[in-house]
Amino acid sequence: MKPLKPVLMLSALCFLLSACRKEINNTTTKQTEKSQSEKTKVVPFKGEYLTTNQPLAGPPLVKQKVTGMGEAASLGNSMFIAYATVNVATPPPFVVTGTATFIAADGSEFYTEFTGTNTPKGDGTASILVTHHVTGGTGRFANASGTVAASGYTILAEAKGSISYDGTIVTALD
Image 1 (tube, rainbow, N blue to C red):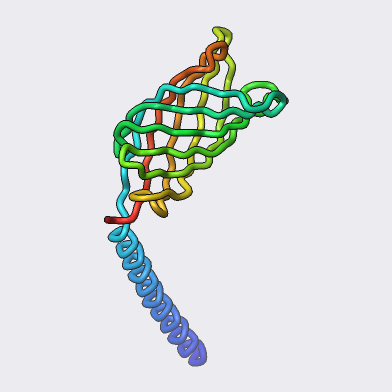
Image 2: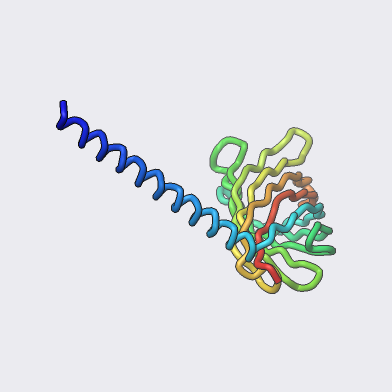
């Protein structure tokens, strides 16, 4: 039974060393996260916009330019321009994808890519649910990231509507 004792001691030593290594890795990870959080800030983005839609191409991939004017937290009086593609080749809800540029009151911009759904209703409107992923920007939004949810509607015959945004943008500290 004596040969078992060195094996047990070696196993215990390995376990102890691996536990110490894990603690070092956890400390390094926490320091990296703290360092990154000290260099960035999370900016709330919540706003309401009135929209106009301009058709650019017809079915089955309906392409349109959507312009929104409104006000949002962290942007003030602002606007956005989105280029959306709605795939009407399948039954509703239709898949919608696109890109958008949001322009703040001070001229800073941030860019997004979005995906979601466009669902026609029986009353001549369509509901819109999309998720925007922030991909960068200019000015105070340079190198921005984040996620923003949007919901709204379009009055189909008038090509006008409304959309609300709620999310966060991660930016570099000033």
